[in-house]
Length: 258
Image 1 (cartoon, one colour):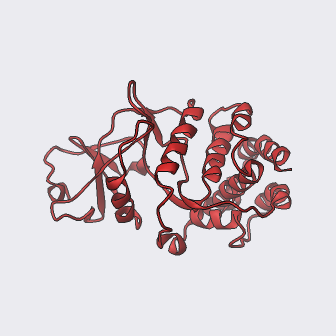
Image 2 (image 1 turned 120 degrees about the vertical axis):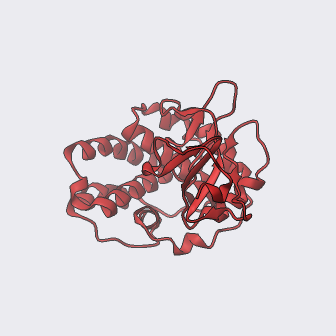
């Protein structure tokens, strides 16, 4: 696989990436998914920005973006910092503006996993038979759900732990899971995650409440994350600790949903 990309340095495993991300010299290698080729074409053509960086994809020696089930990209300097969520959201907004004109990818309709299915449930495009604990916890969010009219586009669906910071450089957006949703939904997912898992204060949600249909985006963000949790791990997900992490954020979303 190294030879396919013209690499010679012994690979070193990197943190994150579910143990499947490696570095060889100045190149990062990871297992490719069905979206890898599409994502590489987009990121390779994206203009430089003063507001964010991306890891430019690296072609294999045969000119393809994927070789033997692996994709490659340039190594970026920096480290993630989940305490800097306002900066994460600002970088995400700039990234979403840069990709706003892209057409809807075909793989959006064919992808089925707990994350894709959880997203569809949150937008009432799919139903689910969840565990009793999940049904009880999600019930007030389902009751608060109402239709919205917002423009969808490709967005990054997992920003909080996937933005790296380095002194003197714009934030770097990495590991892009592609969704077709309004940008304010992607921001709401990031805020919900920060509140549930990264120690953010409720004021974070207030600072971004100017985004379109903010309350409804928080409702959908939480339904998405909770449904994904339930689909991935079932009833065992709903420990006291996990329910307690979601509970105050659910209350906050309901207070914003009008």
